[in-house]
Amino acid sequence: MTASPPPAEPTEPGPTTIESILVAASDETRAALRTLGELLGNAPTACPSPTLFACRHLGVDTVGLASTKFNGPGTALSLLGSLLGTEMARHGERVVVGSLGEGLPPTWGQLDLGPGAKLSIPSRMVVLFPAGTLAAAPLCIAVDDRNWSREFAILSTVADKPAAEGVLESFRDRLKTGENPLRGRVLEASLCDGSVRLGVAPPIEADRGGLILPDDVWAEIDIFLAAAGHRRDLMRRLGLGTSRGLLVAGPPGVGKTHLVRVIAAELAGRFTTILADANSMRHAIAELYAETESFGPTVVVLDDIDLVLAHRDGSGNNGTLADFLAALDGVHQREDILTIGTTNDPKSLDPAAQRASRFDVVITLPPPDAALRARLLGRYLGPLGAGIDLVTVAETLDGATGADIKEVVRRAVLEHGESFSQADLVRVADGGRWKANVVRRRYL
Image (cartoon, rainbow, N blue to C red; front, top):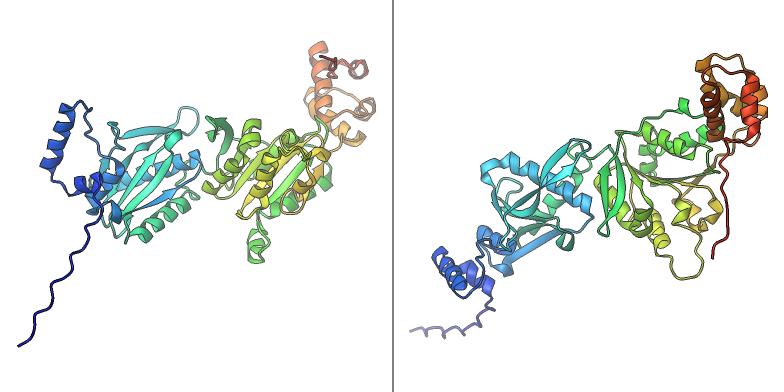
């Protein structure tokens, strides 16, 4: 006769929480609790939190729930929301939409695509994707675009967390394709509520024919662009990296900004261009570069960079410089990022910014010589058909920049119309009224 096994030791019950009780409760019990709460003076709470929403639809309690979050900048969050909207439309009635709780309904926002163009995107909601839609397992996606609670999270069971991670990685990869409605455009970066926001700017239209520069400058530009063009695959195969920095230096009026526009126009479509304003450069340079991870190949334009990345002075206030150096050549390596900065005074920049893998190419645009000045005069005077000795007039404009020469012709046209002599043009040039005379005074 065999002895019966001893009774099993009683196990300690797991921790009981309000959420675990609600998850296990029936619909009738939840309705009774809501009514009781309203009788006690609480506002109606018909909308469960994303956690409760996910627990109900995934069939787990909070202990068995996992969250895979994207912690990135604001525009990237909006773009992920646009992909969420795409998937909601694709799977139609199979998805279940809920709110973020707090008595608020699911909310849609708008992504600005330029003048007169808006795209509706999920901005504050939680969405259930049943098994067989986004993944083999059911998943819930919660998005919240409010500044104080910005989040894009995929909620799953603990066992299905690898599937959630794969979906998030897939979403981020898709942002670098044509599914990203902002990819390949010209974007303006500005600071809004302490965060970088990217707005759509007009396309840049410029070509090399509109900018007269020495041939050796164009040759250096072509070498710089080779990392983004015909040498890209070779650079990656050799482990040399495809992110480069170009610093364009020179006095005002020599064509620095025009050169940047030409480069951006040549890369349009293949590269997204981000034009950074002074505030985003000064206060959010790290977030600015984090935004580039949502676009694939990107050109970041930092105009007058010396105003925000000056030589470190030992004052201890070098956070912007440190963030900039880390963004270009820090622990987190980025590919296919071209940084173009302009400056009137390259010596004001910290030397650390001008080494290889940061601003590894420095081009100085000098004022045009006599031959280039004659060519510039010919461009502006050509349509008038005036018989003017361009070389002679160019010699009277020694030291003038391209912008100065344009202003000389502009003033001559304003004074004399479309018919003036060489002597008239020389008088305008010698008069010097086209020069910007800045009055400098001392102030207490």
